[in-house]
Image 1 (tube, rainbow, N blue to C red):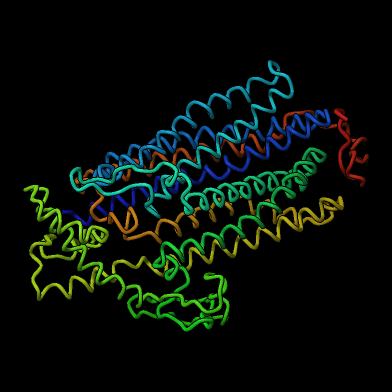
Image 2 (image 1 turned 120 degrees about the horizontal axis):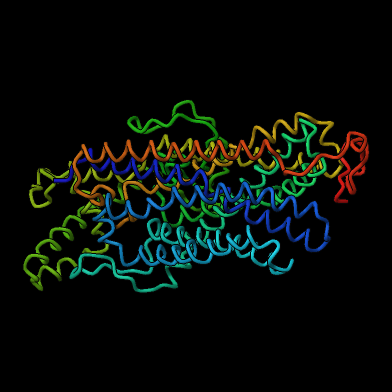
Length: 537
């Protein structure tokens, strides 16, 4: 029998390691392209200040990159140690993008990171710029292959189930790579990283400006990050809408949970719920604040298409569950006997196999063969309810993510406006807002990950492999020990990251401040007194 406690501990451990690792990923994705933009200005203008900017922010990028790699290594091993059934079932498909990602991360990306840091005096300006762009490209392509793998979990395309091997067989690399879900998530995640990187640069630059340190350096860094962030924040919201459309087409249970839709509404009246307290046991939203006639066109891109509610989705799942039980029973019989009749029976219902595996959790002794006619309605009802993810978590994770997304647009817009007018130091509230916003996009990215992964439950591969049957058969003691060990180790990584980031951010760019008399001068392009005029000009 599958131990539910082991499954839940395995889920918790993977969630913690993934969330820890994802603290570092967005900053790597975004800061790499900001470095490339800064160095591009240096190569074009020849002004040493932009070289100093690239080198300083590159130092912070390097700290984050190193710890991000360290925290990501263990995750791939967890698929084999804690999720052996998952690895067996989809290893042929899932392993391919992970292998390519390893080549990207450990060969292309890591090689060019070394050249970027140590090649300033050994490469020409254009050559070093090309290396910096390759670092940025490699970082984001590394994320691409991870999200291709995750896209298969969300929308399993490019593979078919083989009853002889009991696993998914890889059939189409193109379908896997160009999956709509994978591509939409890649672009959305990368641009969310750009937002993270831009606010990181803005926030530290704002700290310098508030303290009247490195003022010309900070003002230029702030301006580039703010302009970069305005574009990125608008794009991330737009692409988030595209992902919502994908959920409507592919994962309607996720969409229903995100929007708290318990009952199908007649179009175009489906309201967009701004605030609610979803109660999954009562199957309703408490204290809901809604805007009517918004959700239908927003999600379906039409005025006359219904959005199915949770009650409808559960009803739609019930015949699939019955068919899936027959498919799983026939598959088990075929595995033991290779009986052609059992194979033919399986072929009739194979598209619903996952629902039968999901029903195993609610069968007597977790044995589908022991389900009697009297048991069947109860098993089907409980399984149908299990097809819906945790609505409260999904509903609020999404709204927190969206609310902060629009807040970032405002921060970037005001920051860019005051920077272009050379009035940053006259608006300390703007600088403080930027400084205190540094950790927020990282947390918002975490909420985005929760929306994606919680919304896929109860599946590890949507519609095919339930999370419940994906885990390895470890003991509870082993799982508790490894969970505590991972939590402690990863907490040390975070402590190391924060210590090094604070240390080098406080030290600043590392150049000598101009004499006090020069502080009254205007830096070129700033056009306003109060910025330091540096010797590099």
